[in-house]
Length: 284
Image (cartoon, rainbow, N blue to C red; front, side, top):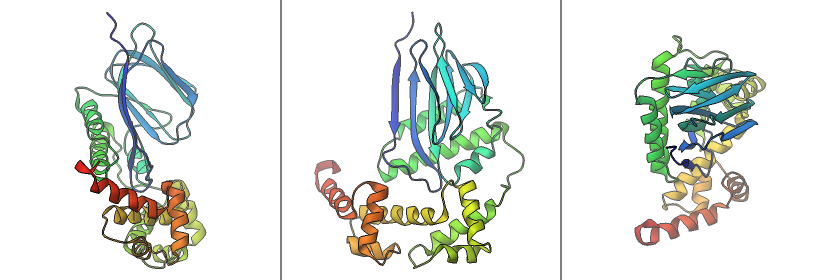
């Protein structure tokens, strides 16, 4: 008797592209022939198959896969996957991205040309289940999802990762730049200041960020400041003006425009909604 299809999933409401962030996660028992694509994703996506069979196609190659196997989808890669008609697969998945994502995926044995892996036991699927179990849009849920994602990637690296842990192509400069931003974001710094601190030209820093982080350094700085601003507003201890100055914005109107661009609402409304939510019974 064929079990009924089901899907349980979580999708993050805001994509924080700093460090590494879970975009979505879930568990699905597919119906016969259920398919996705051909199309592209804008983030990394890893599936672990726990039952049944299906076909995954990437880079013009097709793979017939079953329980105990998995596959990696990389950003902007044209892919397609489809459940078997007679024995449709069941899988668990996690989607993620961020400045650390490419480096960590690069330490596994997986690549665009070799996107398939095998696993034994339940360690990898259980780690994906843990991500699903703690999913939510609160700061604590976000931290827990990141923690289990890192444990999942660590397990994937351990079972067949590359021996070299030193990233290539100038990642060390990006790392230094990110550290400089983390320590100095509250000051009136420019990208030229960041480049000078790292020891490369501004144009070279731009190229390195586009290669390793998929965004220019000025956008990374803005996003970092806005994420810190959201965190301070959520603490409900500071006014919007205090938060703006504390995160490197001397112009509060500019701060409001940038905040709304990335989070969808102006900081005053974000602050009011957080305060209202905390005043309601059970924080709801």
